[in-house]
Length: 453
Image (cartoon, rainbow, N blue to C red; front, top):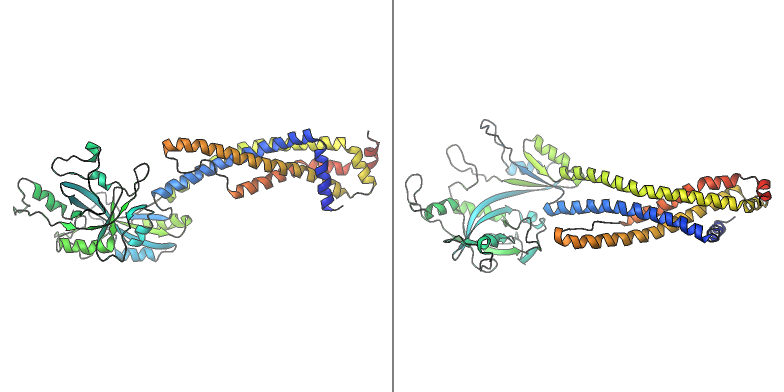
């Protein structure tokens, strides 16, 4: 018997008993929808977690710090310098190493002033921060001079230099256009505060003159987010290759604030960094590279260790949710077995006639397996449609709550592989449930079957 004939016979036999078939299919529909929706919730939570970590920073990035000495002055100080950058760059799985330098400065415009937190790094690293530019652009390597990029919340920290009134007291932003107004920068903050005191004298009793102000052009301003907060909103960003020469020119032979000095108090010829950003090729290799860095004696942090822990937890959650859905599908499999067994009892004489006419036993088995597979297939299709509907309703409700809790992703996520896998699994469960009834039909005695009324 041809395969197409088997398909046609099995489908027609099912619809001869429509009510029983529909009820059996309904069990598969509920089972498939349960397991798909349950797994989709776990996948949605996992994707939401990954998006949250991505908003904090790259998933393949390691931040390196100087080791903390815990007051042990005899311990060798391990600095973050260009030699270390070359060492890390030669490590396996490392794509790039970016130095980061932090400097404080005072910004002044008219009667307003602000204490800036400046983060300097290479322009390649700035481009990978996923900052949404509101005006202008990020610092570029083609810039001829030092330019600042202001975070969206920097303006909130400007206050009146005389009264101290600012946004946090009045609730109103100062009338400053960071992009177009001339912003003067004072790098020597120590000299500035000393010059503002009633008796501006240094440790040697020498009068302290107000430090020089520098007009630093603004290259761009970050776009304000809906909730008013961003990762780099309080920072002022710039190109490290432009900032270091500017600081050396400003302080000349004096130590740059934040930089270590020799025992005699003189500055080192080399400039040291506050952090290093290490870009790893894959998230799976982050832990191995991080271990190498800690073995060198440096502090190294990444999101990978937290992500691995959370993924294990979410894996257990997905397994539990999938298990709950699988119970429904198991009950549906029992229903398919019952339907097929009842079908065999009702069609015993028909089976006997087929055997007497010389029908191959394998064809009889295939006929009942295909009927069970059809039930699984139809139930899988309808179950998937129901799953997508339930998922859409869940996400709609979650999006309404997300306006309050700032949800960043759908809480239920059904990828294509899950839909295809659930359909294949439904057919497989159907055929497994129909295997023993089909085996019984194949083993029926032809003469006994024909005599059955």
